[in-house]
Image (cartoon, rainbow, N blue to C red; front, side):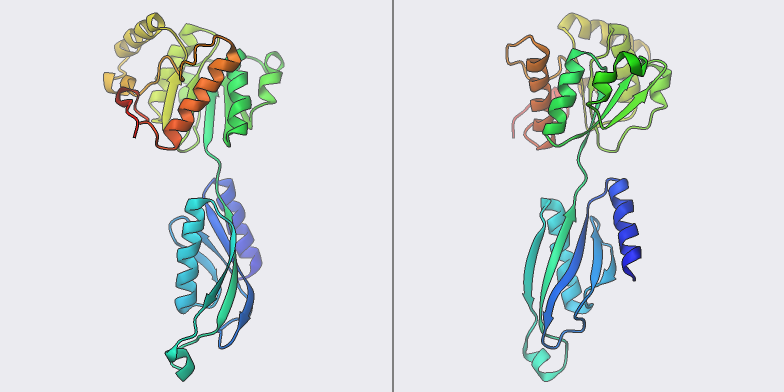
Length: 269
């Protein structure tokens, strides 16, 4: 496989936000089958290209998969000299490989471009998330918030229109639109998409009213039990910045497995 095919596969993986690792022969010596070569390895272990085949390639694929899991780029030396290689029964030699890892950033979807939403977008980027902002207002009204997001999706409303929006795979969603009705409509659409995490800003009174409304629309109690509401950790502050810190901290806790993604199972591990 030529380099153009590998580069095309790498670009496609990055665009589809799939982890991959490009393995390149830097040095080779002894009875190695190749002195140069390159391959790309994906999360599931499928590979394209070659760095020599046989044991060395199997070893390289194993190392590449581990690099993807750990998000690590490295250079590593391998020695395949053995009694069999010395007798000519199999290839031996030494090889130095470069493992270049490309891991997709997690996706945070922010519904609402208000004060809290803008602060969440700022912090999410610093915390390593790609961000998508969803709002029903014109771009000219919320241009400062749009500038903070990786992507912006304008919807006509937070109800049926939002149901037709394609959400990134394995995303984390925070709901804080400009109205209670908008939050309820957005939450209904989002729960049908089954994100990793979903939280909604609001008081206990707002939560009770919203839950009653959504239950009447066919959303199940089990689906609502997953929602973090009020969203985020309560650090005692009232400013948008402090609220946003609590939201990002909670999302990171879910992402890193510290707490369950189901709000009804809030147990530290």
